[in-house]
Amino acid sequence: MNSQRDPHDVLGVRRGASRVEIRAAYRRLARKVHPDVDDGRHSDEMAALNEAYRTLTSEPQRAQGTTQTRPHADHTAPTPPPTVISRPVSFPWRGVVITSAVGAAAIVVLSLFAGPQVDSPPDGVIQSGSCVVINEALFAVEVPCDQAESEVVKQLVPLDAVCADGAPGFLDQLGMGRVCLE
Image (tube, rainbow, N blue to C red; front, side, top):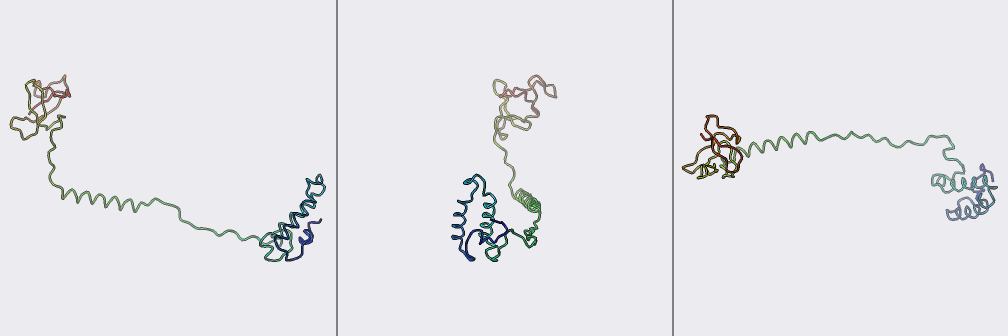
């Protein structure tokens, strides 16, 4: 079988044959000329048979009714795929800046309407400005500042140090250091 022959002649089908008829003819002939059947003697015939089947079953060639065995035999270049122009992806800085500005403005406005800060109750941790009383064991204990006999802590120093005015200070009840009073 010559590959330059008409694909209809190679497969032995009439012009306008259906896909089912083309497939049946191809399979019938492939059983006869397949290289595995006759130790490779019909490999050229099988190649021509494959080319004819491919030509007749491809949609563009069937629609044109062409009998050419090679695609693009008229040497026309295939149309390139359309070019897609897209912008590079960027971070939405404008949205981040606007959101930050609105958040900052909300914090400022809310702070204007907030009431005065309420003194927190004693938490047991003594620091400068805390109010304390000295108990019988000479330990400083934090108390609310509205008690009459409370004193204000001026400074908290390490256990082995003395206060700035030379006074020995009082031990913190938690053992954090020495309390220097005003």
